[in-house]
Length: 209
Image 1 (cartoon, one colour):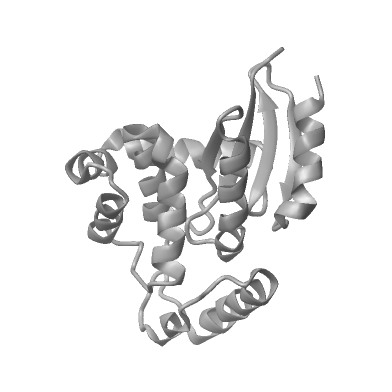
Image 2: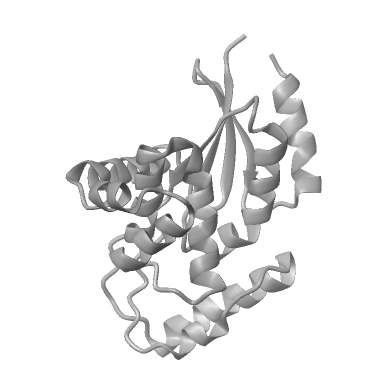
């Protein structure tokens, strides 16, 4: 029987992924020992260079309020008092990729830490120094992380994640896909799902040979 694995398409600065953070954490706790979970970075707004306008802020705030109401996750709405913020998700995506490279078992922890840092603690996860601080706080070797984060290899691997996301035709986050070493794929959820709603699909997929 081929080894099963889960592919989690997400972005560290995607509000619905923050809403899903506790769910993917519970899935890791329940199934992670037998089913590896591979985070794949989506690049929600990767490469964006335009500062947020008042219209942008109103649009994003509406999403955050919707996610908060649906999932109960905390948000720091003082974010919208910032001027000139550039909502570029590539740096945070690359931080998860670097965590995956230097400490593979901690990649999901890095993703969760970035979600909390950005959405709850109001930290600027577009800045390299902030990303390195978060990595250190999560127990990663800060020097090794920084060196990898700034490397061309990490940049290329992050772009590779974005390519895989597009090739898989994933158009929204979070998306959880079950797969095997032989390449068979099963969509488990596209968009936010509660653990209670998602577990039957995971159970069926795990029993399917």
